Length: 280
Image (cartoon, rainbow, N blue to C red; front, top):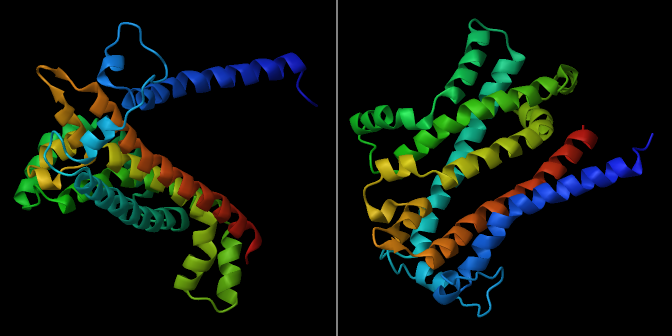
């Protein structure tokens, strides 16, 4: 039975209102990035730039404040984010398969600990992790920071993928085994396509976490040539004032890879659902 017309209109209007409220800060950020300083600090701000300029973007890309090229920071952030996605995704999928398919001692305790770990504030772990990385001689290292990001992404990934793996009927794996498929073939040809949507969801979470993270990167990385994009962004904040044009330009550039990554994996999510539904 179709909903009344007034109800559909109300729900659509509410959805449009929520979208506009959520999108307005992003719109203002992009608009400010193209405004010259005179328009940014004008007493009568305008939604769109009257005299658009790319000067702020050139200033950011050329490393006008930090002295290091934007592309160097971008490469560091990309290495961290992609490494976190790949490592955490693989480990989370293996752990989720073990939790969902096998019964072992302390299994329930392990699942409860996954929830408890996610309740701990990240800021409370800065000093303990700093001490641990220093003991392992992994401070000021992208490898050490990647290990930290993987550790934070794993609990969420395991918990989410566990539901996807548990939803896959065991009969499919048993049928593949009867046809002569080995464990690896069953894992890659039967289980992996069916849990691909969950793997994509966890990869989005892992990518955004590693891409936007600031406190750990700022604390653990000392050399400027190993810094990430969020660290570069803080160079535009100073005691004498904030350079809002480059700040908004850098924030816009920082957002674009996340949007691109989401659009790419969104297609993979749909293809994963279709592949899991029609392939034997």
